[in-house]
Each structure stands twice: as structure tokens, then as C-alpha cells.
Length: 147
Image 1 (cartoon, rainbow, N blue to C red):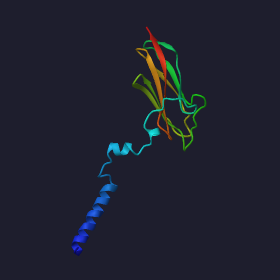
Image 2 (cartoon, helix red, strand yellow; image 1 turned 180 degrees about the horizontal axis):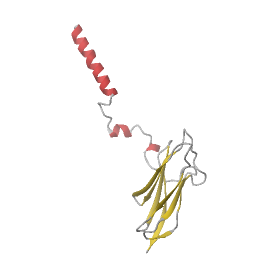
Image 3 (cartoon, rainbow, N blue to C red; image 1 turned 45 degrees about the vertical axis):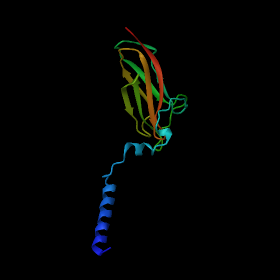
Image 4 (cartoon, rainbow, N blue to C red; image 1 turned 45 degrees about the horizontal axis):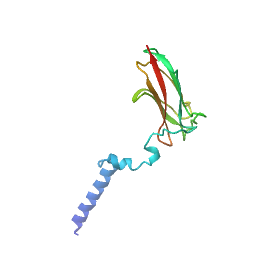
């Protein structure tokens, strides 16, 4: 190779390296999904005393009336709230529709939230909580709405 060809090739390598460093070559979603281990992909629906959300709500409510739903993370003992391990958020769903969400801060936030909601029809209340070291955990509770 002549000096000018080597110089040009070196410039191309530098430009490609800079483009890669600044995200000019986006990572495909399927490539990104492969980076996560199975425990970070699916919501846990089983029981874990420290991670399963506990839902406290009435069994039945009057249509359109406000009522409280308290969700605490840890069905048997409250999940820790440490800088290195805490609950990022707690979300409340009515069947598959998210109706409320609270984001929590490490150390300063207890993993317990009370939402005030109203429903038009019965179904399942689902609580989803995501800690920092695993995928989210879910639990549900049936609720009846009366006229």
C-alpha cells in the first residue's frame, strides 16, 4: 500500500469508530433483548415473600365512588429500600389498563403506596412492582363493582 492509501484507510477506521461511539449504528431490538437474562424478561407471577406486591382494597365498591388501594412490596416482609437495591416503581392496573403509577426513590421512599381510584365495572386489580435486581413482580385481586 502506498502512504496515501494507508492514510485514507486509517481515516476511514477512525470515522467508523467515532460513528459507533456516537450511536450512528443503532442496536437492533432483537440484539438488545438477547442481552437480558430470562429473569429480566418476564414478569414474575409466583410468590416471593420479599418481592410479591400485597394489595389491600375492599372486596366490592360502589360504581364511580373513590376508594383507596394500598400496595406494599413484600407479601410477608417489606422490601428493603437501599441505595443498591430498591423498588423503582409500583403500578396499578384494572385488568390490562394501567390506572396509576408511583416512582420510588432509594432510601427515602418506602415501597408502600396508596392510590385513590374509582371504577365503572368489576374485574381484577393488578399490582406490578419492579425492583432494581430483577424484572417486575405481579399480583392480582378480584374486585366487584355494585350500582
